[in-house]
Image (cartoon, rainbow, N blue to C red):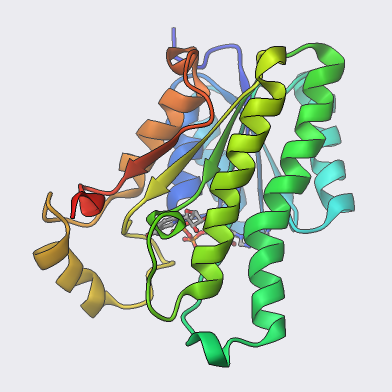
Length: 248
Ligand SMILES: NC(=O)c1ccc[n+]([C@@H]2O[C@H](COP(=O)([O-])OP(=O)(O)OC[C@H]3O[C@@H](n4cnc5c(N)ncnc54)[C@H](O)[C@@H]3O)[C@@H](O)[C@H]2O)c1
């Protein structure tokens, strides 16, 4: 019996990177999946890989920053599986730009994809949980950038600070209904999002106490813990998954 057997999990941004690893880890533990991404081809192959582990996986092309697309995805997931028990808000974007050169369009897109999406998907799923009296678990992707500053990353760090804050507010507001919300703060994880191989090598050799970049699976294992009943008395937390980066 898997750690998520009989449960359905919705994972956003599941076509690659950390979202893909979370989807496959959850599938290995018996969860049926509602997956979404902007990239339908890669997403379909993640869904097929998940189904080869004996679960059902629905893939939807959804822009998580758009309310009507989010509503359609959640409705389709509920129609297929009856209910959703866990939500992982993973979809996100990153860019480097000096603060004074960041454009309105760049800042707005960062906030739409990294912050408003968490609001939209969480709100839509929480309404379902309140209607059905489901004690669901939300797992959000923050970042160590929610707690410290990085040069040329002000929009990204601001967005992740907002995700950490929204997570705490949801945890406080819906704790009495048995709904939990936590965030993960990964350090540098080896995915296509990473800006520069040279910087990554430097960080691995000099900055990260465990002396390696994180793997997507390192984050997926923590997401599994937070989505499952094993974390039943933990809510409103932000868990660093950073190889010790935040120690100094
Ligand atoms: N990689 C890291 O070092 C790192 C560190 C800290 C936090 N994170 C966070 O983890 C999450 C996943 O990062 P990753 O490294 O796997 O990134 P990634 O770029 O490899 O994957 C992100 C996925 O999200 C999808 N996506 C982007 N915008 C979307 C939208 N509007 N609607 C639906 N899907 C969308 C992309 O198509 C992509 O498949 C992000 O929230 C990121 O900020 C990553």
